[in-house]
Length: 142
Image 1: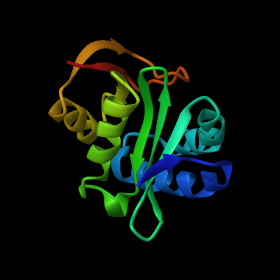
Image 2: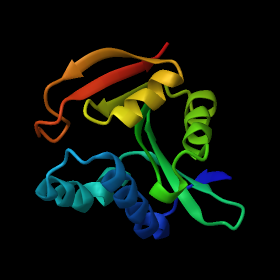
Image 3: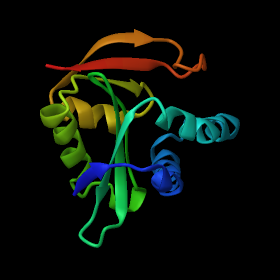
């Protein structure tokens, strides 16, 4: 089930973010990991935030959208490869009309996920949105 997130969900969402990033972003320095973790609540304030809850009502993943951009899509590491990411991506594209996403170039799992669902690279930046040296690939739904 996908519903809008509430501020009371933020601690769970941060835990999900941490679980996912530890599993998929091995290229981040510890210092940068802590930097981004401390900024997550700020980022939440700039997106329309949705959560995926399992049959027991437990949040397993979340999605952040701004205009037609997927700004964040994170699945708890224990729930990866179970189809939740696909469900959220389909919701973003079909219900929320998202067409774009930015992905860390080093995050090959995420890139392959988006490529599999018809996104294609349309640009690249050497630095991420915080000015850090993690190249970003700009993808659009083909």
